[in-house]
Length: 122
Image 1: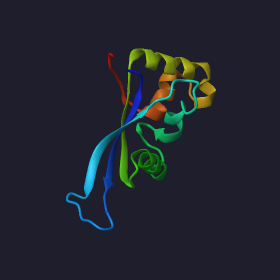
Image 2: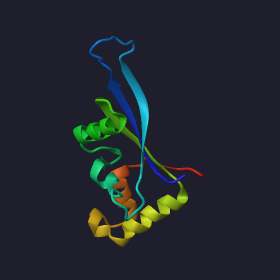
Image 3: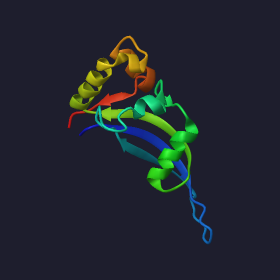
Protein backbone atom coordinates (compact mmCIF):
# COMPACT_ATOMS: atom_id res chain seq x y z
CA UNK A 1 0.00 0.00 0.00
CA UNK A 2 2.70 2.50 0.98
CA UNK A 3 1.59 5.89 2.34
CA UNK A 4 -0.51 8.81 1.11
CA UNK A 5 -1.42 12.23 2.44
CA UNK A 6 -5.17 12.61 1.96
CA UNK A 7 -6.70 16.05 1.44
CA UNK A 8 -10.20 17.33 0.76
CA UNK A 9 -10.10 19.88 -2.04
CA UNK A 10 -12.64 22.29 -3.53
CA UNK A 11 -12.13 23.87 -6.93
CA UNK A 12 -14.27 25.91 -9.28
CA UNK A 13 -14.51 25.80 -13.06
CA UNK A 14 -15.00 29.07 -14.90
CA UNK A 15 -14.51 28.28 -18.58
CA UNK A 16 -14.18 31.39 -20.77
CA UNK A 17 -16.63 30.35 -23.50
CA UNK A 18 -19.02 27.99 -21.74
CA UNK A 19 -21.02 27.61 -18.60
CA UNK A 20 -21.01 24.65 -16.26
CA UNK A 21 -23.42 23.51 -13.61
CA UNK A 22 -22.29 22.78 -11.01
CA UNK A 23 -19.26 25.01 -11.23
CA UNK A 24 -17.78 24.00 -7.87
CA UNK A 25 -16.47 20.53 -7.11
CA UNK A 26 -15.17 18.75 -4.05
CA UNK A 27 -12.80 15.84 -4.37
CA UNK A 28 -10.31 13.79 -2.42
CA UNK A 29 -6.66 14.27 -3.34
CA UNK A 30 -4.12 11.62 -2.39
CA UNK A 31 -0.48 12.67 -2.55
CA UNK A 32 2.09 9.88 -2.25
CA UNK A 33 4.27 10.16 0.83
CA UNK A 34 7.90 9.80 -0.12
CA UNK A 35 9.79 7.15 1.83
CA UNK A 36 12.12 8.42 4.55
CA UNK A 37 15.38 9.70 3.12
CA UNK A 38 13.96 10.38 -0.35
CA UNK A 39 13.54 13.91 -1.66
CA UNK A 40 10.30 15.29 -0.25
CA UNK A 41 9.98 12.89 2.67
CA UNK A 42 9.71 15.83 5.08
CA UNK A 43 6.56 17.11 3.36
CA UNK A 44 4.52 16.49 6.51
CA UNK A 45 6.92 18.64 8.52
CA UNK A 46 6.78 21.50 6.02
CA UNK A 47 3.07 21.45 5.14
CA UNK A 48 1.18 20.28 8.23
CA UNK A 49 0.82 21.44 11.82
CA UNK A 50 -1.22 19.55 14.41
CA UNK A 51 -3.21 17.73 11.74
CA UNK A 52 -4.07 20.88 9.78
CA UNK A 53 -2.67 22.59 6.70
CA UNK A 54 0.05 24.89 8.01
CA UNK A 55 0.07 27.36 5.09
CA UNK A 56 -3.20 27.48 3.17
CA UNK A 57 -1.88 29.37 0.12
CA UNK A 58 1.11 27.02 -0.21
CA UNK A 59 -1.06 23.90 0.02
CA UNK A 60 -3.67 25.28 -2.41
CA UNK A 61 -0.82 25.91 -4.86
CA UNK A 62 0.52 22.35 -4.46
CA UNK A 63 -2.94 20.83 -4.86
CA UNK A 64 -3.70 23.07 -7.84
CA UNK A 65 -0.46 22.10 -9.55
CA UNK A 66 -1.28 18.41 -9.11
CA UNK A 67 -4.87 18.79 -10.30
CA UNK A 68 -4.33 21.37 -13.04
CA UNK A 69 -7.01 23.70 -11.64
CA UNK A 70 -7.14 26.62 -9.25
CA UNK A 71 -7.98 25.25 -5.82
CA UNK A 72 -10.27 27.29 -3.56
CA UNK A 73 -9.98 25.27 -0.36
CA UNK A 74 -7.85 22.42 0.89
CA UNK A 75 -7.92 20.59 4.20
CA UNK A 76 -5.84 17.72 5.48
CA UNK A 77 -7.69 14.52 6.32
CA UNK A 78 -5.08 11.91 7.19
CA UNK A 79 -1.86 10.12 6.52
CA UNK A 80 -3.08 6.79 5.17
CA UNK A 81 -0.33 4.22 5.58
CA UNK A 82 0.54 0.63 6.24
CA UNK A 83 2.53 -0.67 9.22
CA UNK A 84 5.79 -1.02 7.29
CA UNK A 85 5.68 2.56 6.00
CA UNK A 86 4.76 3.93 9.43
CA UNK A 87 7.58 1.95 11.04
CA UNK A 88 10.06 3.38 8.50
CA UNK A 89 8.80 6.91 9.18
CA UNK A 90 9.06 6.45 12.94
CA UNK A 91 12.60 5.09 12.62
CA UNK A 92 13.70 8.03 10.45
CA UNK A 93 12.22 10.50 12.93
CA UNK A 94 13.87 8.76 15.89
CA UNK A 95 17.23 8.97 14.12
CA UNK A 96 17.06 12.79 14.21
CA UNK A 97 14.59 14.02 16.83
CA UNK A 98 16.39 17.37 16.97
CA UNK A 99 15.25 18.02 13.40
CA UNK A 100 11.68 17.92 14.70
CA UNK A 101 12.33 19.83 17.92
CA UNK A 102 10.67 16.97 19.77
CA UNK A 103 11.50 14.72 22.71
CA UNK A 104 9.90 11.62 21.17
CA UNK A 105 8.70 10.18 17.89
CA UNK A 106 5.12 10.39 19.14
CA UNK A 107 5.54 14.10 19.88
CA UNK A 108 7.01 14.76 16.43
CA UNK A 109 4.18 12.92 14.70
CA UNK A 110 1.55 14.68 16.80
CA UNK A 111 3.11 18.10 16.14
CA UNK A 112 2.57 17.69 12.42
CA UNK A 113 -0.09 15.05 11.85
CA UNK A 114 -2.16 15.46 14.99
CA UNK A 115 -4.11 12.24 15.46
CA UNK A 116 -4.70 11.91 11.72
CA UNK A 117 -2.76 8.72 11.01
CA UNK A 118 -4.79 5.87 9.59
CA UNK A 119 -3.01 2.52 9.38
CA UNK A 120 -4.45 0.00 6.92
CA UNK A 121 -3.47 -3.47 5.86
CA UNK A 122 -2.37 -3.88 2.25
